[in-house]
Length: 447
Image 1 (tube, rainbow, N blue to C red):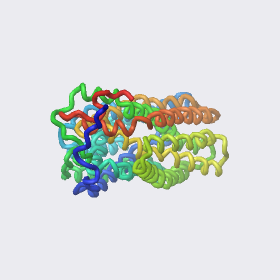
Image 2: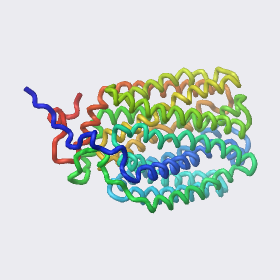
Image 3: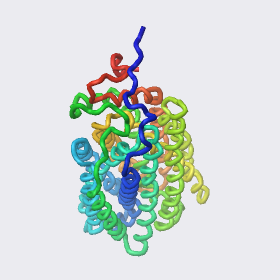
Image 4: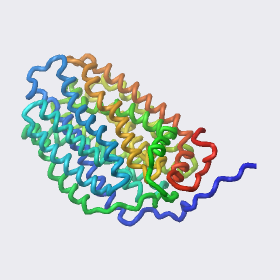
């Protein structure tokens, strides 16, 4: 007769709802994340103005060249992220966050001083390096403040900064470019970022793993421990799904302002304000709702709740993405609203999965590996690829949107497949890097 698995030494019922200092840390990281995405999407908002100044008359390859600005940021981001992730598992995460925010803010300001395309390309690479110091560390700090049962909705608050920051990037970029020129769109985001970075330098790390109720780490994570990530189905399927979605969203979000201007949505300022407003409204509601529903379903015993919420949101979004280029304005705004709304459902749950299936002592590296993969195969290559699909004219936008919908649907399939593994992988994660074997240790990681 099989012996029952040993009970978790720290019962969930005895874990606090949050550790001391959780709310100020969450507020600061949310603000930093918002400026992170403001900086990213300012570039998309003013892309057409930059192209006009640097290239003059548009040629067949102009869109592909402009897409390289997004690629330069992403490549430097994904290459530096594993280095900073490894450091974040071994040193003060707040120190890394503060230094990173100051670096990318200065680099963003330098983007506004670029005298040519090559210089702008270089400054965007330094923005990526700065954000690489922040990306792997920030969600792990939050995860160490809140237990698994509340982590979905709390991380949803953190990732709510993505739609808000993206929308502000579009809106502020369009307005500042219209009234003062595109360079002021980059100058404006630097001072707040520097102040937030200085604030982060004064913060202290929370204890790693206390909020998980997991066995404490007895040693540093080794390469063998990191290799277990590749044997954890939830981590692998989550990362593959995020890669597909990052390719799709990274490409279409970069080109959306240009599509709206080319196809009757309005001028530069108008389309950025309208699309920004859509991102704010849908992003806040859908991101928070997705995190809350994931926690709610998990508490009621639904297996793989976070995967199911993410996958279903994607499947509801795909038809809307396909319809966008076929619906005339102003009706197209309603289709865009619904498509963006359902896309944001997955934001909190998929990142909660990453946090829950990795041990706290190797969590930053796990996030860094995820960042490397989803960007290397995602938005590092999608803007120039979609730019080439669209080409010089406007007639091939429908092919670009169909490509985005197909790849987005692939993400949904991968996440639905991951649902069967999630609960077991979450429990196994608590026992890595400890001397005590976890449940199902004898059977390995196979299902």
